[in-house]
Amino acid sequence: MSEIAQLFGANAGAYASFRPHYPAALFDWLASHCSERQYALDIACGNGQASVPLRRHFAQVLACDASLDQLRAAETPAGISLFAAKAEAQPLISASLDLIVVAQALHWFATPAFFAEVRRLLKPGGLFGAWCYSLMRIDSPLDELIDDFYRNTLGGYWPPGRASVDSGYRDIQMPFPRLEPPEFAIEAHWSFPQLTGYLRTWSAVQYWERQQGRDPVSELEPALLRAWGDIKQPRFVRWPLHLLVGIAH
Image (tube, rainbow, N blue to C red):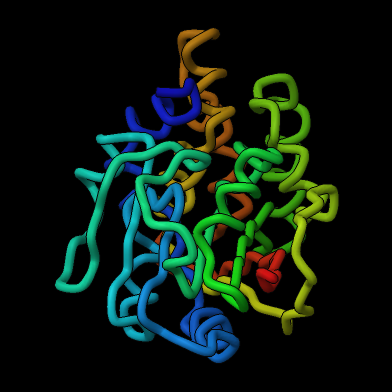
């Protein structure tokens, strides 16, 4: 298992509790560009945040992750099959899938070997879709604190690959003709504990805590709370999504 898979696996419960959910319109749009809707694959599925909404559109959803801990935390309604696998080595039949998605994970394994595996698995005309989101937007005072925490406090602790998220995946080249998607965003009304719980799922926070022996989010909390205002009031949070979508030959 890779270091990244181990890191997210160790924090699978928090990941399931505090990561935001993707908009239904995103899955509606992806499904609308699939000529068939028999089989979809969610690679690096984590706790199933993309797998579950895909099931509304596809007869069968396959969902894999390199972390067994993440799979144990995943939702498993009827029609979703979970299995452990590396992104670039899938135990599936060639030309068998109508859609492959990667949600907030492509930057960890966007290699030629991975895209060769995607090409092998998709039916002719099948769809590949990957997306990421970077920093949340709430309001100027909170955004400034979170941006400074992200870039300065945690600046040297992000694993390789995170720069692709910062660029909105513009640095990743896929070997398929591209589709231009509409704009999508994650939107939520969050409490203050949801915000701090989410920050603690960041990989750099976990690396920082391991090396420094203390929780950097706890050190940031007083300033966040002052900027938040009334702790009893939820705040509107928005994450713009960045998509990379292509059609297999």
